[in-house]
Length: 379
Ligand SMILES: Cc1cc2nc3c(=O)[nH]c(=O)nc-3n(C[C@H](O)[C@H](O)[C@H](O)COP(=O)(O)OP(=O)(O)OC[C@H]3O[C@@H](n4cnc5c(N)ncnc54)[C@H](O)[C@@H]3O)c2cc1C
Image (cartoon, rainbow, N blue to C red; front, side):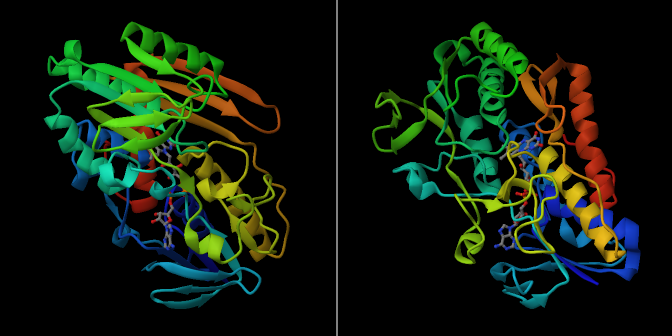
């Protein structure tokens, strides 16, 4: 049996690990990614705000040594889902089971002026560059702004606003700076009123201006201004932007998307093509784009595939359950527990506290141990 996993992010790494643990060398698993290493989303903020450096947060795929698993560094260039045939820059692959875990990509050109200014912090390179920009910033008007929804990690803009507050305070620059946060939602974390209230009171405490239901429409890098979706012009000296998210072009070109994302059965993660699954940010599941949800979906897709390899059927279904960590600044972290399907639970907030900062570190450490087989701490 051959399982082909496209994308070695949260979803692809977890699914590969589960199948390798269960079948060892009896199943041939090929894991393909165009990058040579994995970086946690939260590590981008850690690097940006000087808590660690870029080399520390890269996890090399070459370190994956698991029975039955071969990693191939290549770009996926076309997918024939019906035939389970994939073309890449390193040749073609055929599979018995195909898993699409290619994540979400960004379209900077959707926002006039955004690419020219280098304002985003969602790609690895940009986030690592922002570290120098933030370190060299002498104070002034800061805007953290979102272009459109959905976007990865709904807490990330709020976290960025609170962490820039800390960074400016530590350098004695907060008094001569303002911070504004623009989001296209009515509250910071729509599915969690509790977490939203806690964030709003932190924003008020730190005099961070909160602009709900407001997105970034365009940027003028020369003037240092942006225009909002409400046609208001705002001036900035430092702009940290969450760009427009799209499915990777190869999926659109291969006819696998509908309304922008790959449709799946949200309970089994199977696409309309039997034996072809899509998990994580790229799949239209109805959960937020976050690593914990990608991982949870991968666990179900792995069980579905495993059962079929053993000529059976799995009754494992996806619950949309996850726990997200939120940086509240001043080294305090909160945890939101949430469930989207089944019993449905609104996001319940625990913390924030420094104890949850320890839990978040353990979350990252346990994944690196499981996926890459080595010890690691996030900072
Ligand atoms: C700033 C920031 C902070 C975040 N914080 C958190 C957090 O605290 N907790 C949390 O749970 N989530 C967080 N996230 C979100 C999280 O990173 C993503 O939701 C998660 O990585 C999605 O997993 P995935 O497997 O779907 O995709 P990814 O992890 O994005 O993996 C997709 C992989 O596919 C590869 N790929 C794409 N196209 C191709 C191609 N054509 N050929 C070959 N390879 C390709 C990519 O290189 C990538 O490695 C954060 C994200 C950001 C940006």
